[in-house]
Image (tube, rainbow, N blue to C red; front, top):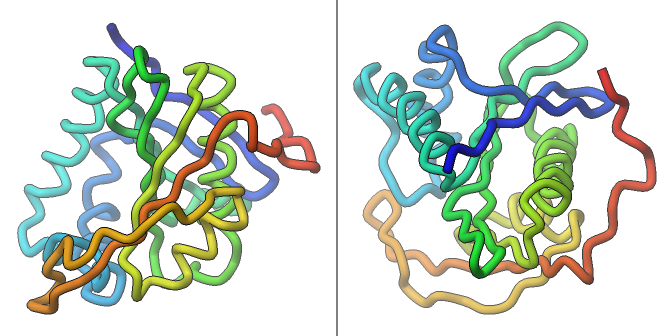
Length: 190
């Protein structure tokens, strides 16, 4: 089953399917040691990784397993990162949320705004009951993004990853449909 990658708009952002033209920007994002410092994989060192990521985004949608979208700032069209839902299970009505934004835009609420829009789409379109997200316990900013959307920290996976040679714990967050609170400000349609 194919899952159409959404085109969503918020007050400040546009979430859209990836194109091949995004590869250089995606590579720059994922090759940053600062951006990738809490990820469970090393920064990218070869540009071909970006091409494979974009191909994987298309395959994920084609297989109906989720949707990853590029995030552009509405005011100038600048690429600021991506947000995605993966591991969609229509039987369990669940999926996993992830996002990655350029450090130049950290602290501006873009992660919260884009993740909120994608979760809204998921509950409305995919009829999810649960969305799960995970973050390194040292990434307090990411945990705060999830809490602002309404996620609840459900537990800790002890020593789950090795990040940059350091053993790392992971927090698991969950958001249940009945606890979801849609945005109080409507997302403008365009």
